[in-house]
Length: 281
Image 1 (cartoon, rainbow, N blue to C red):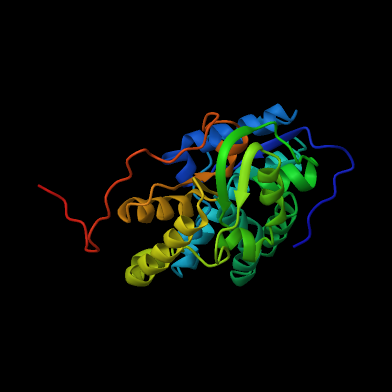
Image 2 (spheres, one colour):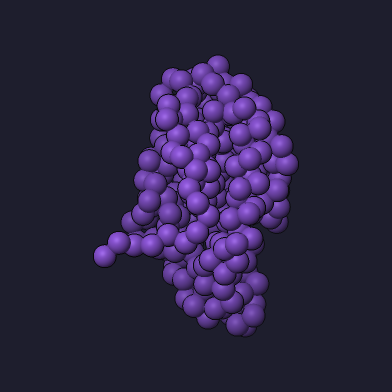
């Protein structure tokens, strides 16, 4: 995927915050915004933004995915084309992959050539957060300070589709006081995979338990990653397995949202039996 080269340092970006960050983890969005602003980048937040269509796309509902993709282009393309913003930044490799890799082909499928070309142009200025910080702004140290041990989990879309791996590792290495330890079998999927976790729950849970076991073996106080979807899945498994380590989005680590000392919960939850949960009525 071709990425735009900027003749001048970008001064203003549009934040594509993603559904899960907006609805469940607003602190991650705030951390991402503050990181950009601390580095002299003005952040524009289009409040009308919605889902990019990835869940529908992954489930095979192409028409429904296209509806949301059209909305995304209608909201973000004018900001870029008018010069109001220089780029689009998302604190998610998964959603950045959808908008930058799959919008163009699904519009070619429907023979909407103009939208396909617009999606291609937009993809060239769409970046995952750490990719933008390191590759575009040239940042290797955000000024973060955190005592403790962290291991890095490369989320699948970020690592395999976007090819982003060096950038988050570089930023974690720049955190003062943080010891970055190796995560065994780090590039193995955590088992989430969106709808995969629902349609193949047994396999998903087994993969999650393997990731949790590797996290425990690493001796890390925390797992750093770049997608809150994987973070949610991993933290659920860690909690159910009674492992004190927790996963955190890298934006919160880089913006000092976790305090000065990285310590797991003093009394981790006991391991839970592996059976479906039931709601009490």
